[in-house]
Image (cartoon, protein in one colour):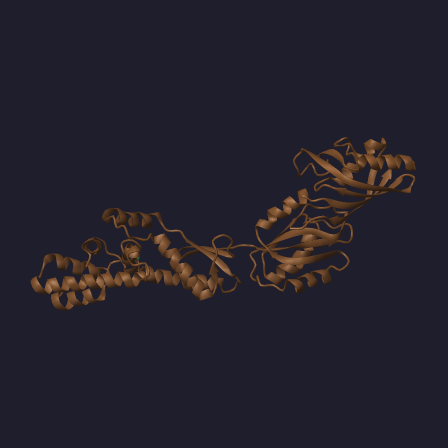
Length: 430
Ligand SMILES: [Zn+2]
């Protein structure tokens, strides 16, 4: 028997009434592989045997006090011994730290969490605990008084217990970085806060007709947006609360999005189901909105992809096809000259006046990487433009009352208006 721990065992048992779990975890580091209740109970058993022998031998006062303390902490053999041999009936007192029996409290918590999570599909979780300040104070007092160097904090103890037991009961694993669900519990008052994290999906969309916005607009039919159409299928399929759509930039309501489509990330909020047949889902959306939108390459994604998709929208070049009405007729020669000037042209765009109400006013420097211009008739142009991500094409054409400069209108010294606009290719992917 090592003298030092034995002294601490005796002191702790005499000074504080602790349940087996709270007693055992004060010595976690001494015996890391042993269940803390078993450890607490075993130490109490050893203390009881020594006290009993001493008491039998010489009726030592100190031993009697230790026997009393053990009995008060609910240690059965001490209760029985004091009752049968000394005629002393001892009342069991609540644990000084946790106020109850920590094992029962934790077992109840595991049952409640398991019950609450039964109806949702989660694959990973993270657990935590929120304990009352008075409990933390009592825990600190025990630590401070006896300066036990082998203890495990109650929070750590609760969290590792929950990690272990919840993994077992729900057959899911822990993930501290990107869990499907997080719960914060207080096992001593029954509080359980559950946060279901979103499910992330990514893919590309094509928009085949005009009049469809990318995201839902207040007061407008949700099915007149790509987001709303996807939600109408995906929300019921996943049993989710709702979803949020994040596009790699956006095109105008009346511009088509063709080619291989524009990348997007979807954040499905509070989903009940996460294992999805993505191919079948994609088919279902495409069949429901045939001729309007088309979804391609639906895949699982992560939270990080939201940021990546936003950056992609800003950085990647897009290919546009535009039909442009001019305020005057131009010659083939002027057209060739215009094309030479537009190729590789750098422009300064102030936030367009039409979106100024929802975006900050700032100047963006953008580049028209290349341009191919053709005359449809003497004052109508057909243009294929490759432009840097985030370029406002309509404003590059019209000049937006001088807010974009130079513009086609400025270069030709006449009015110019984009009457048709299509994104025919998005030159990048996540
Ligand atoms: Zn306790």
